[in-house]
Amino acid sequence: MSTESATGLARGAADAADARITVAVITRDRPASLLRTLDALAALPERPPVIVVDNSRDDSTRRAVRTHPAVTRLLRPAANTGALGRNLAVRHARTAYVAFSDDDSWWEPGSLGRAADLLDARPRLAALTARIVVEPDGTEDPVVRELRESPLHGPDWLPGPALGSFRAGGGFHPGLWLGGEEELLACDLQRQGWWLAYAEDLTVHHQASRLRDSTARRVLGIRNTLWFTWLRRPLLPALRRTGHLMRTVPRDIASAHTFAHATAGLPWVLRQRDPVPPELERRLAALERARRTSPARRYVG
Image (cartoon, rainbow, N blue to C red):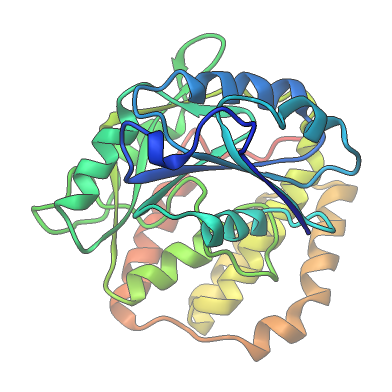
């Protein structure tokens, strides 16, 4: 892996207006989308240090961003790390908190400072999920309604509804790599007594790249849902969820490939299987019921 520090990259963390938070961005072969995100991050009043993990196959991204004023460190792994690039970025961060952006999403001015304030005041709060605005239309992502109407109950000190997962984050399992990868981390955090919450007054903007392979993302997402199910859900819920997925996924070659890939990974999944205790399983079951009727949960691509 190569790494480039921001000597000529216009500023470092020491000059940031809010020294509590770093932004980590993972990218692969989408320099135009990444530059739009970096421009937005450079304009934030918090002036956060930004670590970019470049999973690209060539030097086009490095050439495009290496002198961008937002970037304080550019990391280039030897191979495509997928979501694990966020783990790499976190290891290089030197702030109390890390916020995540993909190369097609960016934070609204003021949201990072507010998030740090909320986390400072709540030591058992592990992660915050922001309101998501879809660009260029400026409309709310359908998943926001699901976040607001979370069926989970939490302590009064949470800044908003308790959640069972979040939209991207760090600490990912290498077996999952990419696609719904945050579900396992969120489950394990809750198992250790941490809380996750939605905060209405935080906003992130998302303008999905046209270069995204939606079919490949569907395959990975369903595969990882199956693997998470068998890693953490008790036997009967795991069987029920697997059966539901088999009945409801599109009946096409991509879905057949998904289940074949998931089956091939069962040996390592079963070796690491560690079902959650009953209290946490009740939370997972409540979330599963709510998601089945959510308009944000669709198989696309």
